[in-house]
Image (cartoon, rainbow, N blue to C red; front, side, top):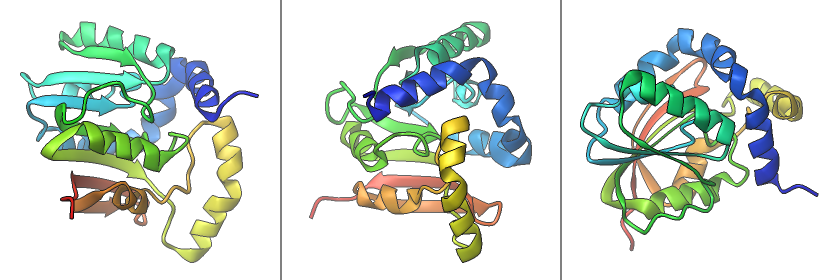
Length: 208
C-alpha cells in the first residue's frame, strides 16, 4: 500500500504539465497580486516549501538566498527551467515537507503558497517549517481553507474526496488553526473570496 506521501508525489508528477493552467483562474482573481505583495518582503536566507513549478520566482527580491523544495520531481523540473529562463539563482531540492533535512534555525524567511492543502500531515509539515526558521524569522502563507460559512463548509467537506482524487489538494483544510497548532503566532492576515483565501504572515511563538 502506497504511503500518503508517495500518493501525493505521484499525483503532482501526473499533473505537473498542466498545473499552471489549472491554477490560472485563481491567479486572475487575486493570487498573483497576493504573491507579489507577500513575497516582496522576503530577505536573507529564504526557503520556499512546495515551490512547485516556480510560479513565485518572479516575485522574490533580487539578492535573496533562495532554496526551494518540492515532493514532485516533475514539478521541480519545471521550476528549474523557469529559474533558468528568468536568470534567478536558487537551489532546488526534491524533499518532503514533513521530513526536511535542513539544520535547525537555518532560514530567515519561509514561504508556502497553496501547499498545506496538499501536505498529508499539515501540522507535521508546519512544525518542520517552524524548526528550520531562525528565532524571530517569518513565515509567509497564501492558502485556501475551509469556509467559515456553515453550509459552504459542509459542502466543501462533502466534495473534498472528489477534489482530492481528481485534482490533488484538500479544499477543507483548517490551515489557520493548523498554523497555530504548529507553534506559530499570526502577525497579520488578509482574507478574500468569502474568507476562503488567506494571506498570512506568522512568526514562531516564543517558548514559554
